[in-house]
Length: 260
Image 1 (spheres, rainbow, N blue to C red):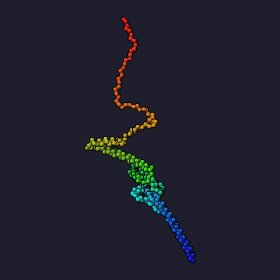
Image 2 (image 1 turned 120 degrees about the vertical axis):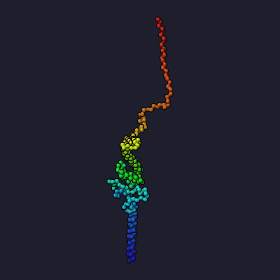
Image 3 (image 1 turned 30 degrees about the vertical axis):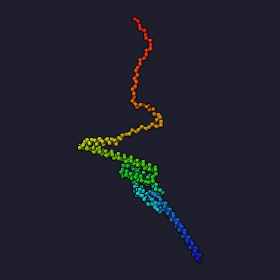
Image 4 (image 1 turned 60 degrees about the vertical axis):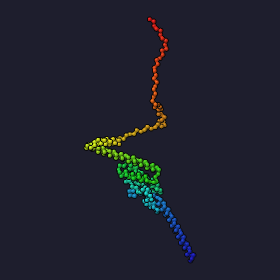
């Protein structure tokens, strides 16, 4: 009877050990899956924004990414989506730099498409995307060069819009000076002076002077085929000797005089 009882107790102990072993293995698997999931990132649209999410410390699930520093928090804040924009399928990333490069591809295209827009809201959206691009920390060197080109293109567009606004303001100023002339302003001389100045500025804006390109240097075959340049002295010429014409000598014998 005692031997049977010991056998039963031994089997129960073995079962407990096996259960504990499986529980430990399960806990290790859950921990590893949670650690892997906690390192993942993804980007997905939520309402009218693009949200960057980070994996939870669980085997599954994501939550909005909240960085620990203000700089990163600004870089990964929700991004306003352009109206009617279609996004690719949700993709999961293992590294944060992959998120940066994906965001660059999206926002660079959105900004570039709005550089020539006339709507003030779209222009402001393009500026917003450019500001977000500049603070992404994980861009590649090629993307940084592309960002510099985009910044230059945006500056060109801004300059053009300023010139258009300037022309419109000058046209309005010319109309005001014409009205002042017609109604008899107190200082007609100043009216005429300003009218001429506005007309000159408008003419310059509408017909800017064409710069003559500088001559290209002679290189290669061009230099070889160019005619030689004759050297001239830069000093003042001195007095030149005057040549006196000399009569030719008559070497013939004189004729005898003729007798009468």
